[in-house]
Each structure stands twice: as C-alpha cells, then as structure tokens.
Length: 209
Image (tube, rainbow, N blue to C red; front, side):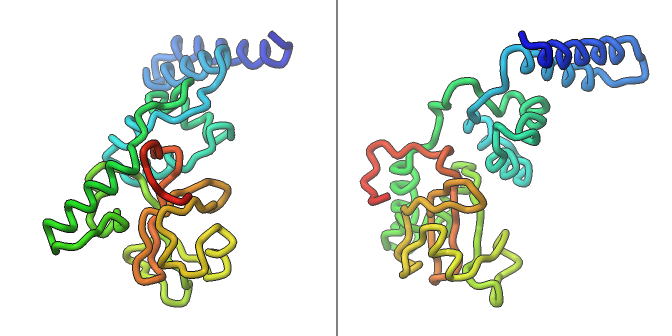
C-alpha cells in the first residue's frame, strides 16, 4: 500500500471512530464511511448494476446513476451511497434489444395493428421495462419543454452520429456528452429517445449499428 493510500485509509478510519463515538451522528453516516473505507481498500466498482438501477422508482435518481462516470469523483461518491447499484463485474442483466423490439412490435399491433418495433418510447416499452432514457429535441427553437430533457441543433445531432435523415437513425449508437447511447426512437424527425448502451444487450439483434 502506498503512503498516500495509507494516509487516506487512516483518515477514514479515524473519522469512522469519531462517528461511532459521537452519539449525535446518524448510523447511516457511519455505514457510508465504512463503505468508503472498504472501497479504498478493495477499489471502486467499475461497472453498473443495471437490474438495480432499472428497479429504482425515483426517475431523477435512476437517470443520474445511469449517466454518472464510475471513474469520476462524483461516481465514487454515488458508489459509496448506492453500492447496490454498482458492481465489480460486468453486469449480465442488461435488457436485450431484441426483447424490447418484440414487445414494442406486439404492443403496436394490439393497439393499432401496425409494426411499432422502432418506437420504443411511443409504445411505452422503455417505461414498461423501467429502462432509463434521455429525451432530446433536435431544434432548440421549437423544443417541447414538457416532454424533452434537453435540445440540440441539427448539426450537433449529425456530429453525435445521427444519420442525415434523422428519422432513419433508429438503432444507431450516438455519443452525447461523452457517453454512448442507443437511439431507441426518433419521432417526427425531431424528438429522439436515447438509452445508455451499457443498459442493453445486443446479442441476437439484427441491427446495423
């Protein structure tokens, strides 16, 4: 163990005992410090537990955990507070894209008799499987504030990896703010729904990514 690591662990150990001996502090703070001490010894998790993240009821928390960088300071803090949402091994519980498309296809047929396999948000497939997604509007001047999280320009969309015909971009992998996303739907050439690539399994999915 390096001197720097020893000093960090020692300080955490001292702060832990201060929390234990101080009756005014909540037990949760003790547990958080203890969890941080464990991570300092064994290393912080590199992967996310998508089953746990998708099972969260709080949408804002779900999206925060879905987008956080596990190697960042913020990511380490989130791992200490929500250790069940991270893993030292790559999660095998990602949701297959083929399952999402088949559910969306059947939902569309039942509702309107048409194939909606490329509209995973419109058919509420993402919501049904509790998949975290980001809604972007391609045109800041006409952004629908009620339904979209953010807006981008057409040129920004092309730079991210969208096709020139934005409406034909379903299944593409695009990059937004340094993170890779799967294009789960494009509606009306403007509204687009993105899912973190890490949350999905692409085996047995016949898409040109």
